[in-house]
Structures are given as structure tokens and as C-alpha cells.
View (cartoon, rainbow, N blue to C red):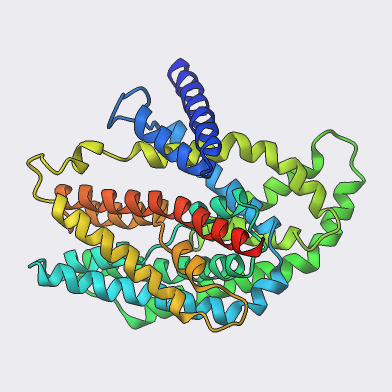
Length: 386
């Protein structure tokens, strides 16, 4: 128990100090939290190692983050951006998969190895981008709405791709029927969760309003978010989709602002744990170009492919008033989603440990490059507006 408590002290302290440092030099706090994880993690100082308890807190942190993002979003605006967001997501998944597979095939990697690498490059971390946009006060920007909508569709498409390649790895084949069932489950969950939730939310909020116990509103709101995340997980979907849907539903109620106000302290404690643990997975020794590491060149090549192929998603923007560069850059970070893909390939025995390490480097570099890039884009927009 003492190990976990000391670990949390170090995680929170490092996150806040590094976040403060980044804010003072004009960068977003999330970049500091990621770098803090690198420094205190096994790859540098080795002060903190990811235990099961710390991992659980990190997972809860990303759920709270997506719940908060849902609360700050407008379901009607997201639906209006639906076709645009879907098109961005389709390009943002299709191009990285095709280019990633092609590059690995050209390098001599055959079959499922190339497929798993291509699948890893399709991921988009909505958590990273959402946190950066929130830090910049840009969640209501037109481009932000497209990115968040596209990230939700991206998660669904990524889940389908992950199910397909995992099925191929385990059985040597996958049926179109199983892919269709998974796709229908994802769409049905989102639609039902939002439609049914919007109808029932006013009654639920009214019932909660009559209670006298302290913290009733925030506790039941979090229960609702975690319950939807659990349902999503039970039917084979990503838990973050359930948390985001819960936020969208409660955002339609009259107590939206009160819930937002009360969830912020919870997010301030749990969300940094998630970003620090993501940073802890980095092994800086692998970034040493002078080290005897045959995968260093592949890591750099795949990083270029990963960035460029997601930027292409910005080309799919056709709505007036939506800037293409923030959309493209917002799709770049792979974060926890990319790590899940790479880890699945390693577990399935299709990706060797050295290639897995290279993919972790790719995931982390794309995660690090997006926050300052988005910051610079919006700073440039503000200076032009003055």
C-alpha cells in the first residue's frame, strides 16, 4: 500500500511541476505531464513503475476526461458535423493503414506483421487532443468539434480493425458476419445511449435534485458515466465511447454547468495520472541514434508516415469555417489507443519485442508533437485576429 501511495505522490507532484513549467513557457500542461512520466518512469529515473492499481487509476482518469469532454460538447453540434467528422475519420483511418502496410511490406515484413503496424497507425487518441483543446479553451471551435466527432468514429473503426486483425491472428481467418455484427453493435450503442439517455436524463436529474446527501449530483453523474463505459466494455466496445456518450447526454440537462463545476476537481486528480502513465512507457534509450538498435530507423520512418498520413485527414474538410490544419494535427497523436494496438500485436505473437518497442516510440513521438503544434496553430490564429 505504501508503494502505491508514494507512487501517487510522485506522479501528482511531477505532473503539477512539469505542467506548471510548460504553462510558463507557453505550452500546454499535458505536454509537461507526458514528459514527467518519461522522467520518473522506468526509462530514466525509475522512481515509479506502473502497478495494477496505478493502471486502474489511469484508466479511470481517461474515462473522467472523456466524460468531461462530453459535458463540454453539444450533441446537436456534433450531429451537424456528423458527415464531415465521418469523412475525416474515414480518411484518417484508411490512409495511415494503407501507407503503413505498404511501407512495412516494402521493408520485407510480410502478412500480419505489416497489418498490425498499419492498424496501429490508424489510431487517434481523443484523450490527448481533447485535453490540449480544453487547455487552450478551444473545445467549442469548429475544427475541435470535427476532430472530436472524427475521433469517436475513429475509435469505432479502429475497434473493428483491431477485432479483424486479432481474429485473423487467432484463427487464421475472420468472417464478414462477425465484422458486420461488431459494426452494428458500435453504432447501435451510441445511438441508443444518446437517444434513450436524453429522454431519461431530465427525470434522473429531477430525482437527484430531491436528495439531501452531500455530493449526490456528482456521484450519480459519475455512476452514470462509469455504467455506460461498463456496458460498452461488456458488448466489446471501447470504454471511452461510453463515458463520452454519458457526458453528451448529461450536457442536455439543466444541471450541466453544476456537473461540469463538480467534475473538475475529480479530473484534476485523476487525468494527470493517465497522462503520466502514458509517458512512463517511453524508453528514451531507444531514441539514441548511436545505440546499436536496428529498429531506430524504422521508428523514425514510421513516425514520419504516422504524422503525414493523419495530416491528410485535414484535406477531407469541406465545411466552410473549419480550418484544415487544426483538424489534421488534432488527428496525429496515437496515445493510449496506439499502445493498445501495438500491445495486442505483441500478445498475439505477431509483433516481435524490438518492433513493438519501435511502435511505442512512434506512438509517443506522435503524442508529443501534437500539443505544441496545436498550440502554435491557435496562437497564430489569435495573432492574425488582432
